[in-house]
Image (cartoon, rainbow, N blue to C red):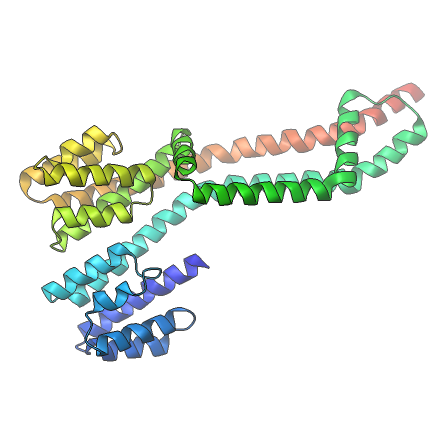
Length: 346
C-alpha cells in the first residue's frame, strides 16, 4: 500500500512539473492534477490547491500534509519557489524519488527472496507433518516395530503440531505483535536491531551503502538547489532513514556550524564509506560539493546493485541445499522404518 502511494506521488510530481513547464499557473495545474488522480492523494491535492489559492506558498501548503510530503520534498519545493525554478525542481524531486524507490526495491529483494523461500519450505514441512506423517504413523503402529530416533522425532513434531499447533501459532503471533510494538516504541531496541543487521555479512554492506547513497544524493540535491549547508544537514537528518546516520548528521551540523570541514566530520563519524568521505573532501576543495556527492551516490548505488546480484548468486545454492536437507531429512526419517521392515522380511 505504501509503495503504491509512493508511486502515485512520484507520478503526480512529474505531471505537475510538466504542467508548470508548459506555462500553466500553479493553482490551475494543481486542479488539473487533482482531477486526474484517484485514491487518497486526490483530496490532499485539492486541499493544497485551496491553500495556494488562499495565498500560501506551495511549500507552506505541503507542510500541512507531512505524512505525504516529507521534509526533503518540502525543502526542495521551497528552494524551487525561491529561485523561480519550481518546474525544474519538481522534475529533480521526481527523478530522485524514482531512483530511491528502485534502490529500495533492490535492497528489499535481497531480504525478501530468502525469506520467501524459507517460508515456503516451512509450509511444505508443515503440510507433511499434518497430512502425511499421521498415515505413516498408523502404519508404524500396526507393524509394532521400534522406530529409529529420527522417525520418533518427526512423529513427535507431527503430534505436537496436530495437538497444539493452533495455540503455538497464536502464541507466536502474539509474541511477534508485542515485539513489533515494543520495537517501534523503543529507540534503544531499534538501535540494537540496526547494529545487528549492519554486522551481517553482505547484507550489512548493502544496507550501509544504500543508506549512504541516499544520504549523499539527498545532501547533494539540497546543496545544488541553493539550500545552505546548515539547513541541508538539518533536513537530511530528518530523512536519513537510519538512527546512526541521523545522529551522525546532527553531529556534522553542529561541527560545520563551528567552522569544521564536512569531510573531516564524516570521517570521524565512521558511518560513511571511504568513497563518500573522499568525494566530500574533493568537493569541498573544488567548490563542487553537490556534484561530487551526486557522483558518490551513483558509485554507492552501483556497489549496492553488484552486491545484491552477488548475494542472490550465493544464496540460491545455499537455500536449495537447506531445502534439500530439511525435506530430504523428513522423508528419509519416515522411510527408515519401512526399510527396516523390508530388511526383516527378507
